[in-house]
Length: 453
Ligand SMILES: *Cc1c(COP(=O)(O)O)cnc(C)c1O
Image (cartoon, rainbow, N blue to C red; front, side):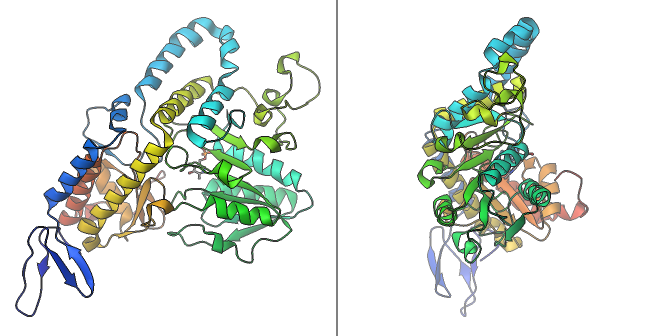
């Protein structure tokens, strides 16, 4: 039942008729309710009115450009507190304190780690630190895990993990002569514990997976997968880039060993802000990361001649952190912690549900289908839509002031960052997408892709 909601024509032997608002009909054993476009808008307005974290939208910078932003899963919006903090830091701390600022800055990476630990990731202070990029952290923790299981010769990774994760592990496997077992997964359903059947054995040192898949938004069962890996004696390394700040991360409940993630997506710390890493406290003393830098050194300013890693999460740091990026990550983590992950996750589920409803109602008739799992417990806060012309539709959307993004091979991602996205924004963005399909404006955009998608 594609086409436009509210004008569903019931073709029947008696010649068909227009349905009434709210009327429920049965067609081929399925029941349908006839919704009018304003029902869907009224629904959005009702959800916005009862949204307990609606007020957080005012904590972000919104230029007066009418843009509907569906890409907070790629680069989060700028928080007002971050803009003000960075201005103050540039003027007073960098501009005036100069090198004396280090007495404060030296604590920052750990301080942000603690806010992330307690307010976002639900683990203990001292288990998370801000450092480097997600790619580099993945390298450091994977190498540390491989060293800790040096008698084992295999790494397991899901095939649809983020490309940087695959590349980093390919590099480690090549350098160390290890076997990389790439587990095929369904691109839309994502990584499931059943995908591990026959894959794990006592040669596997490490399993690496994303909690929320970047392409489909599918959420992996961290508990079940970690349990299976642990049964085989392997360590687990989770990439939380699309999960941190969008869904609860059951690191503690699952007993996961290691994790990494971005701060510039749902944590709103800005382009290129430093990443975080997590190492379960009881593992820290036994793990050594491969880059022996002075920010991981015990008694760093003794400037001793030989590396001896500090007895804390900071042993996984390397060199001088980005102070501006760390302040931005601090503010982003604080806002997220203040809103609370339970409220954020509940809103993310409702926003994505609503986007799926609009897709079914308005876009299915134009060749769209929902790639993301329909069960909210099985997804993060973005919805991925299939369409053979997804690239051109993405370009037409940008021209119409809607910012989703494109992912290969034929998918449009709609990221719905819960802290600042209203249900009415979802409605407006989908109205524009529907209008593109109705007018065929996407046909005016070339099929060739640009460098950044
Ligand atoms: C965005 C993302 C990254 C990015 O890594 P960088 O080192 O920050 O470029 C890594 N992994 C996943 C799953 C991501 O979504």
